[in-house]
Length: 57
Image (cartoon, one colour):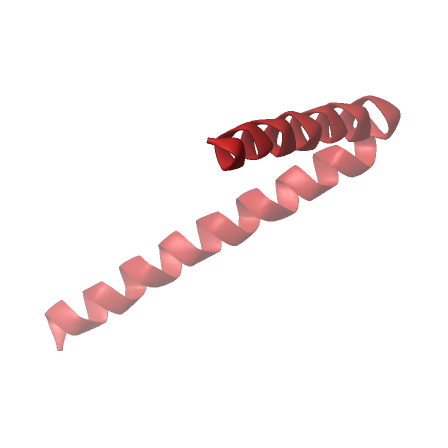
């Protein structure tokens, strides 16, 4: 039961830090989000290319 309480506290602290980072430096935060989005989009694209190559031989 104590681990759930600790987990909840850690999540709230991480959320508070995220908000702090966004409000103190929004341009850098936007850059980080953009980079993460590009990474995810590239990963999905590469997975599609991989499965397409498997299906087409």
